[in-house]
Length: 209
Image (tube, rainbow, N blue to C red; front, side, top):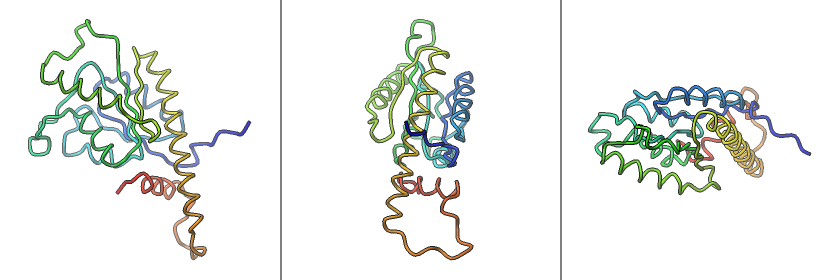
């Protein structure tokens, strides 16, 4: 049986959404690190001025959609539709063609935790529909869970799956580059095997800036 590629040979940085559930954020950060990856994260207080830099700073996006629509950045000129932070992040990740993993918390309705605002509830349901239509063959998928224990188990598998996709995508881009590779570079040029270079190559392959 072939050995599994080690993600630590690259420096994949994952953009983590600014969802307010602290317990889940902490668990997710630990899982990402256990998979040999790094992360850059928004906070629940991130606004429409700075969330883009977080999404652009990673090669993939991971977020969590709960029973409530979430914080709405109050910057009218940058968020005229009054979208939640999680929806703004999701839209930016899709725009940049990033791989996306969205966790959807289920099964806690009736405990006072569901969205009570009619407008926000409508937007939340529309966003849930969009998320559930993600195509896994593009490195985009959603994972439903119930509670922190279920989240930790499923998140570990989901991040491993995401890591595998990133490694496979990087290998494909490297093979294509080798097929059209120019003569060996001069001494002192950028090391094509360094983590920084591999991460840049993957970002370009995924359609980043």
